[in-house]
Image (cartoon, rainbow, N blue to C red; front, side):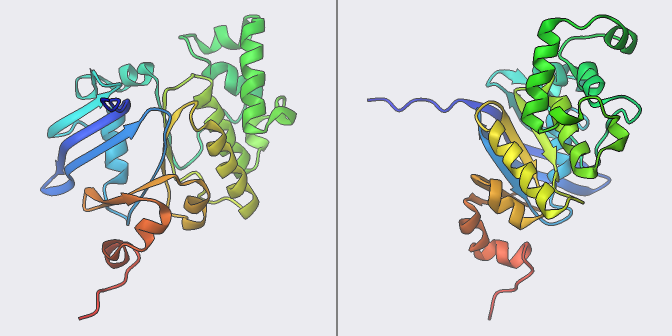
Length: 254
């Protein structure tokens, strides 16, 4: 019996990118299954952000293949075109509309083109309200729906921004260091939120906090010098001698 062909939502093969003589990405090959929650770790300068920039169209690779859903060549598309395909990105620092309510932030983010005026001053439909209610429940901010986004804690702003991405109904979520600056309680809740999205969306999380990584990780990819050093479970990568040497700062004994 023939084994089923894996349904990769994202494929990078032999990707290279050089900036002013510095090779940020070097023969990077990366495969991600549909519905997967993948964690990416690596020391500063490992190429994590450049990899995300290439996937979202902020940066063009010099060479290599970058495909979404098996047949869409991302290297030929602009950022807004890639976003419309269902690829959403959350940066480390939350970016919300601080002078609008949580509800309004989600309303402005709903899938479909609309102006700010139309979104805020037209009557919302029952479908829109239902969608926003679902997102609010998912991110744990139902009780904050009418609060100004600027009044939220750092962690709540992070959850709101994740909710703003979810309002767009993305297929692939790229989340950059979501636990940065959070309390232990907020970090744990963020992990629970991301785990609740597994299977409903494909998610890539870049993170340095290894306690948080251990909470959410199914499969961990370690980047070093712009390429994949190793992949596996948290225990497998932490016990890998190459990871100990380049990421955890331990040198091999002579």
